[in-house]
Image 1 (cartoon, helix red, strand yellow):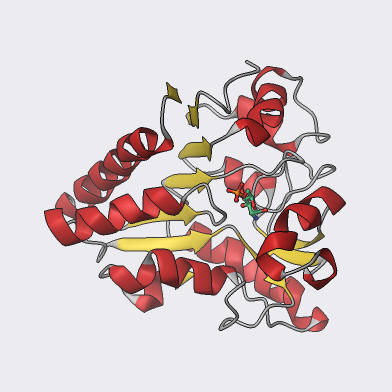
Image 2: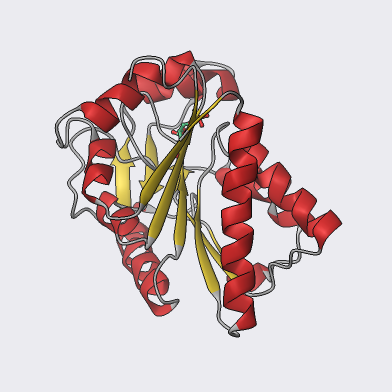
Length: 244
Ligand code: GLP
């Protein structure tokens, strides 16, 4: 779906999320959301906060799993995805803190594998992800699944691509300050979600959107694996759609 403005697109996505949360609440069920960071979902989170404050949308039945976190990364750092999520969403809604899951960027090398296995198991135990929000990196990454990531990949430690590090340099005050590793949900973890919504804005995303939507399915562009998912929606603006 192509929109003139990101602001209109996010209203549609926020409504879909709110409807899902409310329909689950009516049945006394939990709603499991997979959440993304980066600039793309900021306006979506703003709209969800507005719906909470002005329309009484409650997040008490919501369980969240974030896609990724830099490694190493202290939780309190302003560059952490932990900080990002609290700043843009969690601090402003009525979610139970026990229902928030974000990969831990403070783990030692020995602890990472166990943590990642447990993360995938926690998603399964929660009943799987009902709706996964995604952005897309210019390398074609979803989460931090860089080129070479397989469709069966699970939550794990990864090394960031040079272009990804370059794109994050602004947030860190220089390329050499960007962590070179991250923990990310796998492509396989993402593809298990029942519904996926991907957000992309601006001309910088136009060529990767074209490759993702029209290119052949390959680990060279991990986002192309979304073509194999039965219920995925791309919500993009006209600038990101320019090469389609
Ligand atoms: C980071 C995140 C991704 C995100 C991407 C795009 O690499 N790990 O999940 O999709 O950035 O970010 P932006 O939305 O700022 O373009």
